[in-house]
Image (cartoon, rainbow, N blue to C red; front, side, top):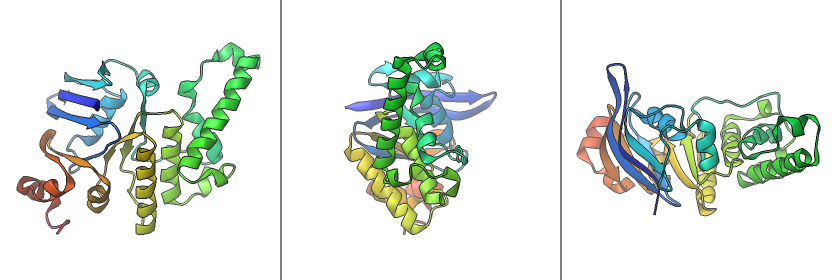
Length: 254
C-alpha cells in the first residue's frame, strides 16, 4: 500500500521550475532514496511533503489524505517526521531534552495547564520524557540521555536528530542527507539504525549523496534531474540505467 503519493507535482520560484511534473509513491515499510545533483529539487520536494512549502501544481497524499495546504505542525501530527541537512541541535541541552523538543507536537495540555502545573500537564511531561527515552533507545543512545548534545561526534549527532524525529511517532520519516560527513564506521551504524527503524514499522524516504550508502540500504531509488524524474526502480536497475549514469553517477558505482 502506498503511504505517500506524489502526483504530478511542480514547484516554481518565479520563472524557475524547481520541480516539474514529478510522480512517485512510497510504500509502507519501504526505504526509498531520492537522488540527484545539487539543484535537482530534492530538498524542495522534502519541503513540500513536510509543509514548509506548497506545490505550484499537483498533489501530495499521506494515507490518501491530501497534504497540500497544511501547516508543518499539522503534517507532523499526521505522521511525517523530518531531519535536516544542517544540524539543528541545541548543544547546551541534554540529549533527552533535545529529543523532548520533537515530542511536543503530540502534547495537548495547553499554556494554562503548564503555567499552573495541573495534573494533565504533569502527566504529559512524564509521557514526553518516557517517549523521548524510548526514541533514544531506538537509536542506541539512551545511555547518554543526560549528556550535553554538544559533546557528541558527528555520527551520533545524526542519530540524535533521527531520535528527535522519531519522538513525534512518524509513519513516514524524511532523512535529509543523514550520511553527510560520516566516516565508514559511522555510516555502517547509521545504516543498521535505519534498517531497525524500518523493521519497527516506520517508512523511510531519504535524500543522500553517498551513492554506496544509497545503493546498499534502499529498496527503490528515484532520480531527479533539473526538477524532473528521469528514473525510478531498484538499486540494480538504477545502476544500469544509462541516462542516470550519464547525468549523475558517472564512474562512482563501477
